[in-house]
Amino acid sequence: MHKVTLKMRMKVTANEAWSILSNFSGFMEWAGIDQGKIRVEGEGIGMIRHLATPIGEIGERLTYLNHEAQQIGYEIAYGEPIGMQSYQALITVISEDHSSCTIDWSGQFIPVDPEAVKEVTAALSGSYQNMHQSLERYIHDRL
Image (cartoon, rainbow, N blue to C red; front, side):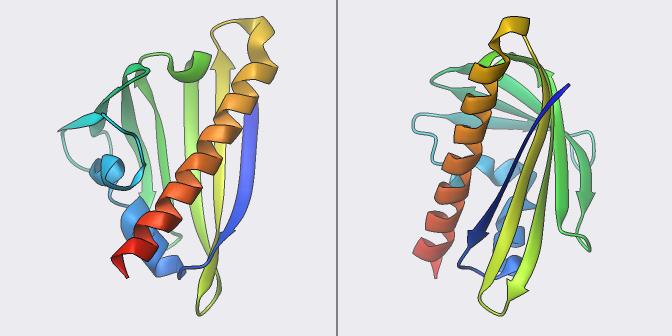
């Protein structure tokens, strides 16, 4: 498996960021995906969010949720987003001070095309950056 990790600071509290990220079924509310739809199947660990986006349909299964450690993990249940046949993610919110936090976006993947590791790595890194910006904008718009 190949790994992508980005740690980015956000000017919101860890609790504000976690309250949004920990809601696995609320992804489309903040992710900034235009013309996307979500359907949720099940509850808690094992639940699947079915995402219909302009780039295709994928399913993501919640694999880990730890409110105390402010960590959420998920994996691909079906689909091949950005050229990945297998993907596991772990997102960690780390408190920095009373008004900011760092979010550790981390994922491991196997590309559909073994020759496309660099392209998939770049796409996943870009996806993390976009989600980070969308999350921060969403939280600031609500304050």
